[in-house]
Length: 98
Image (tube, rainbow, N blue to C red):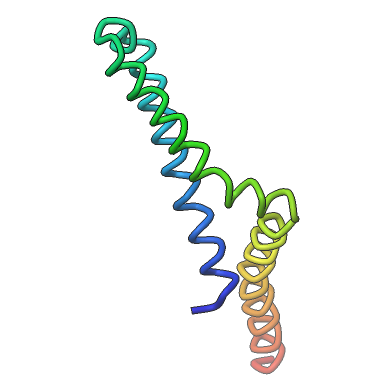
């Protein structure tokens, strides 16, 4: 597998895990579990926030260094190239038929 694709997949997976941990932390606060269960609820919320931070480090660093933007732009360009190639092939085929 291409290292650029591996980096993009890694960043997406880390971002999903980070958002999931934030969602669980938000759920415990919104439902009041953090306050009803005492120290256990506080510990759960803090651990979810810590996991969200740990998983968000790699995508944030990639975004800061410009790697993530370059990977996304490169992916968009590579997906646009086959369409342009198909249009050029159709044009040459239609000219050859005439």
